[in-house]
Amino acid sequence: MGKEDYNIILINLDGLRRDRVELCSTLNNLKEENCFFSNMFTVAPYTFASLHAIFSGMYPSRNGMNAYYNIFKFKKDEITTLPQLLQNEGYYTCCDIINKVVIPNQGFDELNIFDEETVDFKQRHRDLIKKLANKDKFFLFLHFTETHKHLVREIVKKYKQESNDDEFFNLKDENIERYNSYLPSCDSYVSAILDILKESKIEHKTILIFFSDHGTSIGERKGEKFYGVFTYDYTINVFCIIKTPEKLNKKIEGQCQTIDLYPTISDMLGIKLEENSMIQGKSLFKMIENLENDEREVFVETGGLYGPWPSSKKHNVFCLRSKMKKIIYNETPNSWEFYDLKKDPNELQNIYDEENNDVLEYKKKLMKKFEDNNIDLGLKI
Ligand SMILES: [Zn+2]
Image (cartoon, rainbow, N blue to C red; front, side):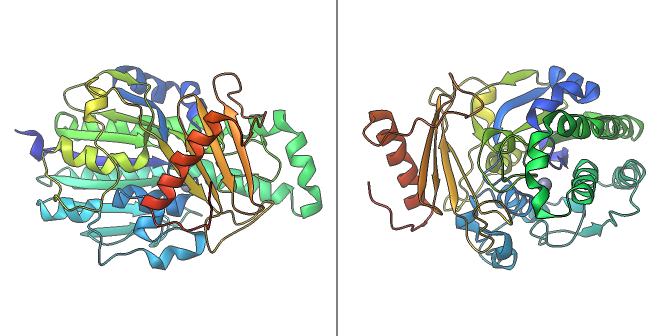
């Protein structure tokens, strides 16, 4: 059997913070024994934009899904999504999602929607995998939203009035405890998925990928109770674990982005992408094989539903990140931030100074990203 016959199971552990992977024993073991990308970044720190980018391999501004309210602007007629690509290659394509607009829903033979109120993820996804195990080859996307669901419920219940806002940000210990209390159930879900792969005897022909679509705030920055408002590392730094039948064991620390998953999957299956493809992600194969010397730049954009400068109709916060430094531009209120990530990993000291050469260099790089993505903010250096 060749790798072109492998199944693909792609699982989003919605909102799972990168820095909590080590606190989940099953996930941590999985990470130790397989390919682990610790410096993967989402291209947009909220579910809709993040997932549309992954399924298209493109930044939000190229695929059209570039604001909370632009869900229906995804350029579905121009874009071949990952499931479409795989369906064309003879894959049976299936997903289980929270609602039909959370991902581009084209290219699925079977589209399942769960009811978040009543769903038992473990049982439901075990049954689904068991059923698919009979197919020649399949692609399955699973959306695990339990952590996110409990968190939002608890916080919304507790902090009803906006006047309570400060209180949340002052209770960091409580926020951490609350967040961590959801981890055992997430880890037990991961464990159930691994078990069913073994039981169904498809482990030797299945590529299993766990990732998170964005992180989640525990009160680091006033104004952001969940995610999607800012572009600080606690929401943009995600992770990815790729488990292949060949048992590749690599820890990859180089920066990469979630849009790289699409070309990586096609690469792993030996599917060639069209020459004129609009895809902006780059296969992670070279990184896995240590064949890449240049650092990949990370570009992230968002526009919050709430926070100090909400912008649900267009993105208004942008950042460009290297392993050492990060520049942020907030279109509203037209302010810049610059951080030395080596000295200040929590991004607490804004050292933006427009006369500084580093700042100028990062500004130019960010402008280049705006240009490449047709984002016109009327900025000049
Ligand atoms: Zn999400």
